[in-house]
Amino acid sequence: MSDFNPSEFAGGSTTLNVETMKTWGISSTIFTVADIKKRDYEARDDRPATSKLVLVFDECEEELPLNPTNNRFMMKDFGAESTNAWIGKKVVATVDARNPSMAWIALSAVPSAAALPPRPVRPAAPVAQAAAPKPAPRPIAAAVPSVVDVEFVDPFAQE
Image (cartoon, rainbow, N blue to C red; front, top):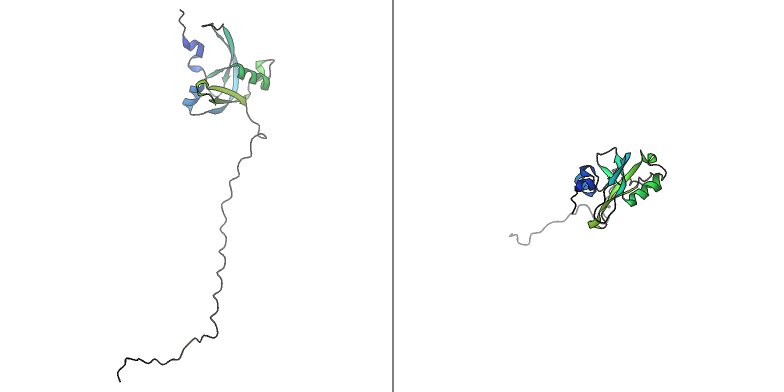
């Protein structure tokens, strides 16, 4: 039975992974590719030895080994002839947790301004409108006298 150092396969503490992004409190961010490295992985279990391209970013110390899906994205969007064309390109790194037991970091293109939905426009503060004028009081009917001249007679008065 062989004994391996697992950090050699995970890239040590400098590997960008789902847990790293969780500790940062983010699920998606934009990175700028600063460099591309090649990392060799030894054979283990039934898997042969392999090599992966690793992205180095300007914004953090962590590096992202490219899985086949992310490698195809980089080749399709930034060129398959040379990784030098990838340097300086911006990518969106998003935690893809559709299957929580297999969460991974998916790379995608930074949307162009034209592809983004328009920003919502904050409505202007309501302008104070002048209060509607109060209706004029209705005139008192002319048939009602304003002063009534009536003599009051007290029926209980003793004479």
